[in-house]
Length: 512
Image (cartoon, rainbow, N blue to C red):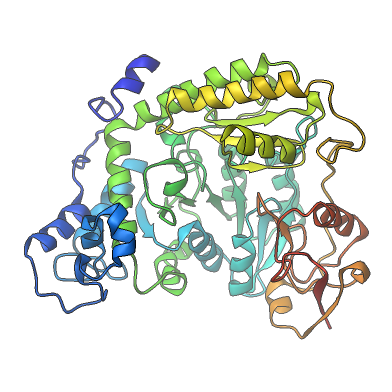
C-alpha cells in the first residue's frame, strides 16, 4: 500500500492481515455500555453525576454532555475489571489475541502500575532483580513495594546526540555471571527517544539463566504493526521473547491519557511468577476504574486490528519525509539510520547543535514563535512524536519552523547566550548503593542543604524531567559526579522530579 493511500484510507478500509481469528471488528465493552445507556435506567449507582445530568454546565457548554453518559461503573451489563466475566473479559481476550499474548489486562493507572506489578511479581524482598539504569522512576516505586535488591545495568551512551541508548546483550550476560540469582531483568525498549534494544538476544540470555524478561514498552505498542520489519528488532517485545510487557496505549494510539495494557507470554520460565501478576494488579490499580479509559482501550484495539499497518505506515512516512528535510537544513540534524541504531522511525530526535542552540532553546523557539509543541527537550535535542493522527501540515509547520530558525540564528550565538551549548552532556556513573530503595523509603531522614549533600545517603529520588530517569535512587550515596549533574539542571531552572514543593532543590532528605 502506498503512503498516500494509507493517509487517505486510515479509517475507511484497509482491514488487511491484522484482522485475525477472534472477530477483531467487535468492541464488546463499548457495546455493553451503550446497551446500558439504551435502557434509560433510573440510576442509583456511583458516579454521582447520573450518566450526564450532574456535570457542571461550565464544562458541558463547550463539550456537550453525551460523553459523560459513558462514565459508568460496574453493572450486570458492564462487567468488573477486578473479576471480569463479561464484556471486559471479552475485550481483554481480543487484545491478547491481537498482540499474540497468553493473557492481557487493561490498566487504568497508566504504565506506572504495570511496571510496579511486574517487579512485585518477579522479585520478593531480598531477591536480586536486574534493572536498566535508564528505567522510568516507576521502576523505583516497584522496588520500594517489593523490597527487591536492584542490580543495575547501564545503557550505552550515544555521545554524538547526548542521549542514552540500548542495553547491550553482552552487558546483561556479564551481570548474570556476577549475579546468577537475579530473578528477572527489567528494561525499557523502545526508550523515550525510540532506541530499541536487541530483545531477542536479551530474552535468550535471561531464559538461559532462569530469569524473566520484563519490558517497559510504554512507547512501543505500535511497533507490532510495522509491516516491513518482520525480522527486525523493531518488532514488539512479545514477538522477541519478553515474558511480560506493558504498553502505554495513550502515547501512540487513540486511547485516553492514563490508559495502558499489560501482556503475559509464557515461555516456560518461572511460570509461577506469571500467575501472580493478576493478584498484584489488585494492589496497584484503583477499585473504581474509569470506564471511559477502558472503553478507549477497547476502541484503540479495534482500530489497530482494522487499520494498524496503515496507521504505522502513515506515521512512519510523515516522519521519514520530515527527517530527510530537516537533515537538509544547515545547522540542523535529525536522528536516523546513519546513526547505527535500531530505532522507532516515527520518532524525530532533532538537534540544532550546528547553530550552537541547546535543545531547551530550540524547544522555546519552536513553541513561543511558531506554536510547534514538541514532546521534550534536553541539553542537545528536542523530541517530536509522530502518530497516525498527525497530518502533513503538522510536519510542514515543524520543518518550516526549523528552516526559519536556521536562517535567523545562524552565526548569532555567543558565549553569553544561555541558550548556547558550551559542552557535551556527560551522564554520571552508578552511585554506590548503601541500602535498598525499600529500606531507604522507611528509614528515618533529615533535611540538609543541597550544597552540603555530597557524600550523604539520599533519602529521595531525583530525576530530571523529562525523561524522568532517576540520577539518584533512595539509599544511594550522593557522589560528586551525580551531584554535579543534578546541579547543572538546578542552576538552569530545569524541572527535577523529587526536588520538593517549589522544585528549586534547596534542601534534600538524607538517611540519618
